[in-house]
Image (cartoon, rainbow, N blue to C red):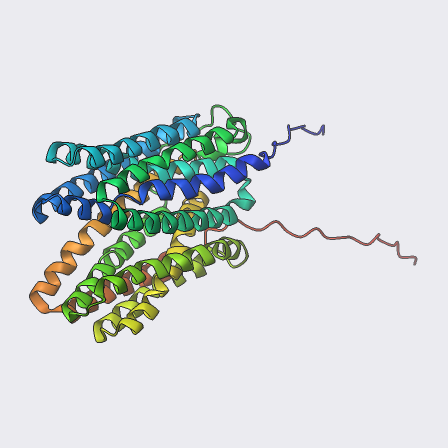
Length: 423
């Protein structure tokens, strides 16, 4: 039978892989100016808390609504770099609007722009990663992405905090927008030909231009994807409210250094993410995905229970460091498990959008539900409720989530030459 010759898949140029490092760094830096800094900036301009909350909520809803359409679009768009570049320019424009015109209509428009586009930048980076890296190296590459994103976010948050303290809060957003320039240069340094179109949407390697895609309904009937999405929803329903509840505990304690302790609670886990994320990627190849998936959510009940029984700042910081384990594990494994489940489907980015939407809904509901629980039953009950939901998420992972790592190639065996028996 004649051998079928296939063209070898060209390896990406080393500059493209190095550019991917800096793309993660600058994207995290670009988006660090939003979130808490928006609230501080608008409060500094005399805004009422209800108006600030409304603007931030609308931005969050815009982000949720954009996830699935963006994932669908990313599966079809070949120019992944242009997609990320355009979205980055929109985020930079939103930062400039907030810095220049902090009135209600402008701030609302900027929040919608950043919310709708900021949430899909992660989808674009994951798609580029899938296209740049061979499947066997994707796990470690996602870990490296997470490390550079954590470092970029930490560096930018420190810089913007200093700018807000020494200059003014509007200068935070000018600095944030300035990160778009090196980000665009980084994208330009990445060669478009290195990004394999088929792999970037979860299609087989040999589909480089027009990959076939399974029906959407078939994707959503995959039990693994349903279990994974449900588990992440429950996890975010618990985890997203844990740090705000800890902040309330510190504030009620009346300590003079409550704000400083809260900032440490935010920074320490990110340092651990930067340290652990590459290890998580490597270990996902050796140990499989499931043990690390269990490790990530498994520490949330521990944090919740300790927060419920103590307000000691030293203990809070020590236990909150465990959030770095959660962030490293799930930050790497979310995209990796989706890649496993959708391999060969051509629907990787659509599945990412669905997962992101459900996780975002869980996070959005988390603070409201925990706030209601605290108001009705007290702070301790709020933490215990978080622990109960986190244990449920862990139980769903444990009982129903299978291993998704593709089978490892069998080691080559050397066969000794056979000897004929003489009889």
